Length: 64
Image (cartoon, rainbow, N blue to C red; front, side, top):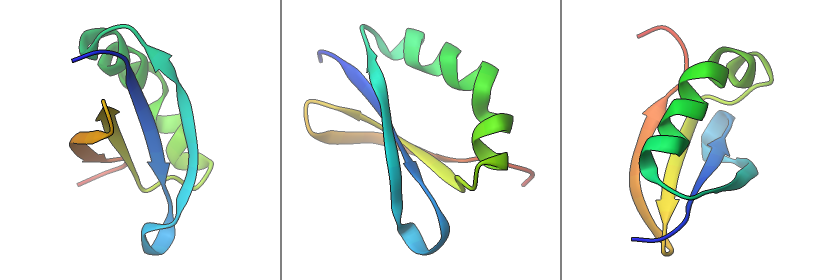
């Protein structure tokens, strides 16, 4: 796989915005680990990790 992008998803599954390209899945996950709380405060309910046009996985942001 190539570049990775986070797609932030808000209420009702509405796409809020995409986050810059990351060179690796590890780099993208490290970035999200340090920023998920502020993204949740902005209204993001989840984040989708996308690579080569395919969703790798989706992660909820916030308490379980």
